Amino acid sequence: MFPTLKSWLKHQIYWEKFQSVDGYGNPSYEEEGTYIYGFVELITRFYLNANGEQVISQATIYFNGDDCSDMSVKDKLTVTGIGRKSIISINSIITPRGILSHKEVLI
Image (cartoon, rainbow, N blue to C red):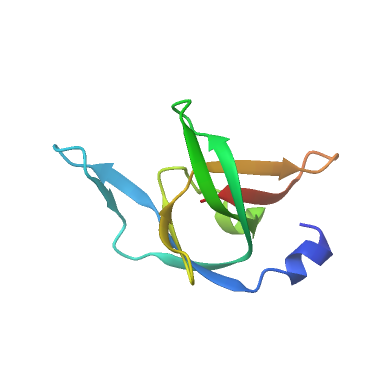
């Protein structure tokens, strides 16, 4: 991750990893979540989700790629001032040398 971006990761975010879906289609998450640091940009965007539906993203969160390498769009994030949200999209930003720099996560 670029040093300037790394210095911006000041927001503590609670990350709940998806575990499974029960017989009724309700998702469950691991009992113990993880706190990670990111940079929250409050910006509203229209975005197409994995199903091709137009959804509204309330924020973009930037994470160090090493901190969330196994993050999935099925996971949940809790952000102070926004609440507990589903992930809409995860974009991995790769350097010209092919190294994961950081991730942009839309919620």
